[in-house]
Length: 445
Image (cartoon, rainbow, N blue to C red; front, side):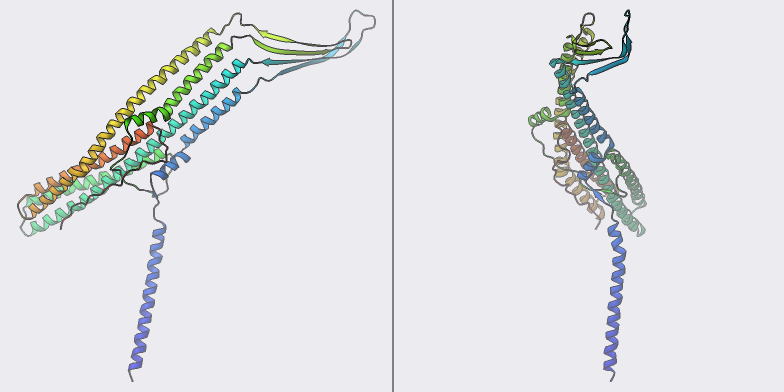
């Protein structure tokens, strides 16, 4: 008799429980979804470079300067305009018995004629100036890309240091708590507890400084990009632990072929040569075609002729000497810039090899050995074979090795950025680097 009501009651309870679970699930989803949707955007190096090259006002101003130079080249191609003048009035004959009077007017035309040598030299100088300005624009963009990359890698460096400082702080807190527990039961002296608390304060100080440095370099990154980044944006990526570059001879050839500073120097030299030709060609007499038509009450006349500007007193010796000096300066500057950039590339390449060797040595040997020494010192302390100072010294050695590895990776990335700037590598053809291998941080059992 009581079986059926009991089953119905159980069924209603299960249904109500299922409904409660479903409602809790909806509430949890409603709480989680806004958090997921409002997650901060993550920007990598490629996105930052696109923002910097497409929205940086200084880069846009450099491109506007190229357009202005092209407009100047169009001006150089323009032909001189003719000059038309006219006069009108009334005229009357004199010394006649029946003087005739009436309307008089005069129309004249003056058309300057350019020598082909003068015109071609002016156009060639303007075209060379366009190439010079465009090479300067490319050099400015390469420098902007280098600043963004350096700021980006600096952010990754400081973030890695802050993450390591947080791990050190957590590990030091574990050490301090463990020693406090042993001191509470009389297994560890007061000295060990004081040492551990001091070490904890140092770890806290290091962590706080690392967090502040992250904020500082993020501000530097915003300055390098040149535009405000989205609110709460995160910078994603890792410092490279290996970067492949071609040989020094190949890099020197790329420098000679693509470096915009060298191209700008060559364009300035060519422009100076054409300006010298222009100044020399302007010594020739200037020619203008003249035409005139006069009408008065008794006579209508038309005339044509030439006007010559004879260089009798001014042979433009000062202008020619100035153009020769500018040409000599452009040649010397181009040669000096070529030598300086070649030496800079060689020095950067040597620095690249040093940084690569340091990263390999730290990652493959020193850091692993420091981690093993820390593990052994920890075990020896737990079994009473070593004191707390030996354990903390081993931990400091490991921290120093890890910090040196982070710095070496940053220096490797920085020197690769400089080499890419010198050889004017395309901005969005990012350096292919193997991902960073994160070593495990020893923790207390």
